[in-house]
Length: 99
Image (cartoon, rainbow, N blue to C red; front, top):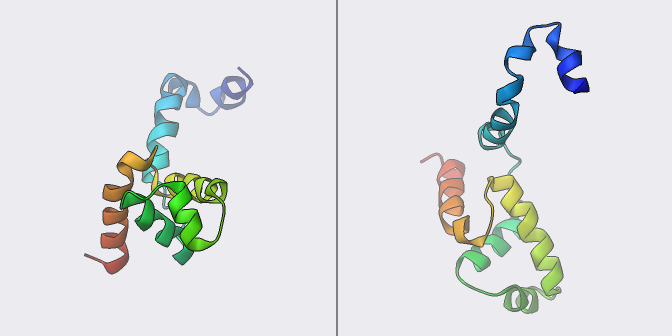
């Protein structure tokens, strides 16, 4: 309610009903920070079907640490989970190489 009162004076009151939709859309339109090499490696391993435990064992970290890194990766790529990871990494890699 305070947000509506704050911005009604500048005409944003007309946009308020669509605000939740706009916020969700902006998540996909915003330029996200690039994945660092460690995140990229974990993402590739996860997209290949490896479990968090397997990834953690190969990197010398806990499965919980892998889960944390995957959460950061999902946020940066604008996805919700492992099922979308392979396609998202493909798009990310194509963007990195310019093709």
